Image 1 (spheres, rainbow, N blue to C red):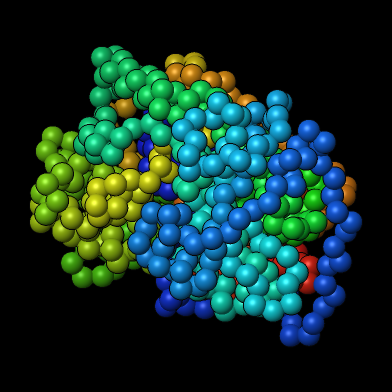
Image 2: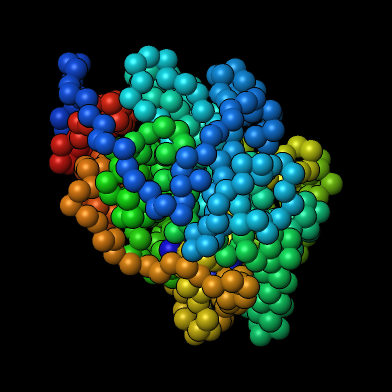
Length: 550
């Protein structure tokens, strides 16, 4: 299963593929085509009888959850403030590290006091805001990544949900999967200082010596992950376990049926849940879809194509405006862009931060800005600044992607991303195939091509991962009892191309809602047309008609 971060080549990565974590109050309301949601009330779903669970997991499914303040659950200060202002409460839910030998949950276990998973217990973190009206159930949200936390995201997205009846009818619940965000124990690989140092490196040498050095770095990183996280947890952080954790979460929230909103990579998590627990699903929205059947290399190339389309759209907009650093001809935007960033290979640009802007951070900042059209002004300003020899704006964008705060501390999203993707799909061990994927990626995304391709490429971190992968790409096996689902796909989505949404909807037998725009994910981000359809589906079970477009 491929991730939603965007690799420049087989060994690197750029962009974040989870929910964008940007809620912009001034978003223009999108228009609709096709049948629209009406104002009359429709029939509500009737909950089924309580679902069953394996007897050996009874202590997990029946555990009591102690809700309390969210002070220590979000890294970002604004998210912490929002969790308080919007009256969220937080908790951690115990899950077995190894489902094949779960043992009996010891109710005296303390997630804050544990330093290892020797007791075969991990904890997933939840943030919950109670429904304001007649409650249908809980709406569990995960933003994807993989490695991005739902606790942080739900604090940011609640403002947009206030514009719908969903806030009245559902407890809004953000989920941090095992090892991610506020969950415990965390996935931990590099220290904050090591992450700064890694970002400062330039990784463009595709000579045999350069490839060997890159692979040695990947191997060291994999060893650090095993040492600092522990192989037991590291082997269990895949989406296979994530889907089973999600069913325990459903049960401890008191819901007979799951209501789930998954963005980007979390569409894969939701799809696996739908496959494994079809009778436990009430409603599911999968936004910014990935195709579970797609091989990793092909997905990398499609992401390159998606970000090239996003760059081309940005360049068209930028070159039509005065003083664009890419000039006034969109046809020349790529060489103009390379003239700006290529000098950084030899020397970072100056910044007020003593780190400077490295070549790798410059590309990361650019791709971060291409996720949503509302970041285009920041990118335009950042490129103009770079033309003047400074890199503060692009460094800030790169820090947003990398999860680095103003205090120099990082969240664990990067480490979690690597850990989850390496157990979610088989590693590429064939060097010829790795080189061919690198060649095709450069061809698909020429704005990211440094011109140093040799037809060879380093094997990725996953080739050196200390624990085996637990999932394989494949078509979903969906039971007839699965209720109707809703897939949302955006025509100009750079990280999860539109076609993947079409394919996922087909595999799930789900309805497809198309949003015409240049953004990654759309539900509950201030786009009224999309939000109306999402709310109507969640509350009343009414799906948009075939061919519906927002």
